[in-house]
Image 1 (cartoon, helix red, strand yellow):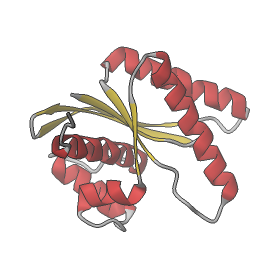
Image 2 (cartoon, one colour):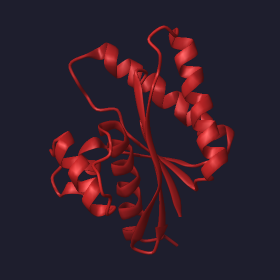
Image 3 (tube, helix red, strand yellow):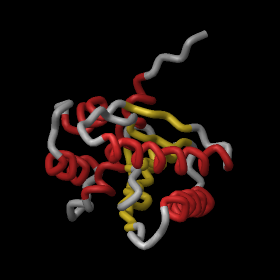
Length: 161
């Protein structure tokens, strides 16, 4: 199974692609891309969609994994993250890629054992779990954490019927 993890944002977006062979996970690609502040919101959302479509074409993931929107104090940030998520989900829908969502605490729990882990802890655990030589950038580590969460969750699901 190949999972495309997304850490959405309209300023920076993290992406991580993992390949699973049983309980073994291999890093295929990870990146963090910056969106120009000069772009309008419409242009940023279209850029996100195009970038995700390119990743889907290049790496052929079986599923896209995203964090659910968390509740925070800054409503404007939450709306922007929601818009970025929608652009990524639209790209997945265009390519008929299923999308799964996980609460942020579940992602942190899956990767670190602590649903309140810090960004630094997540980065370190992603490096450790994937046997990377260096710590990935924050946004890429968050995207990889979502992909790891999906792989862990899909391994323990019991099929119904």
